[in-house]
Image 1 (cartoon, rainbow, N blue to C red):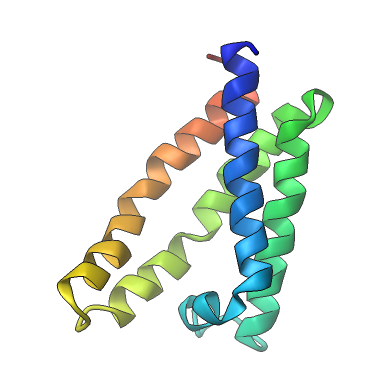
Image 2: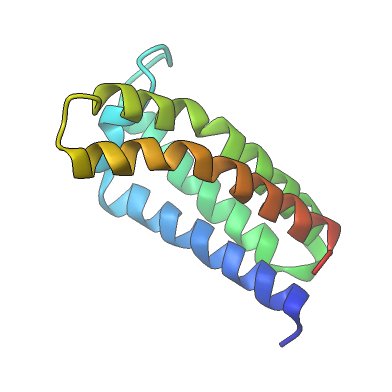
Amino acid sequence: MTTRRAEAAALAGLLAAAGVTHLLRPGFYDPIVPRALPGPARFWTYASGVAELTVAAAVAHPATRRTGGMAAAALFAAVLPANAQMAYDWRHRSLARRAVAYGRLPVQAPLIWWAVRVARGRS
């Protein structure tokens, strides 16, 4: 497998795993849905899971990889408010939980970079 395909497969796998966990364990994600979004949190949890699975499929397929990679970058940028909500809500939790919540914030930048890299076919 070429490096380019391996990178795309890894990104698709990450997105697919995230999508599946949103659908199977929505209770973890519901509390971090920004309260400013209209409607129930569960809707947004499921919608983001479906979006992640859809984008994973697009990244996995060579014909849609460019579009899928850019959609992945947009998706990673779009979940930043949820990560910020989690960091804020967990600010008084244990040190380990705060580390997880705060650690999610800077991870978005390399994820966006990775998705753009896959979209551009650079490896």
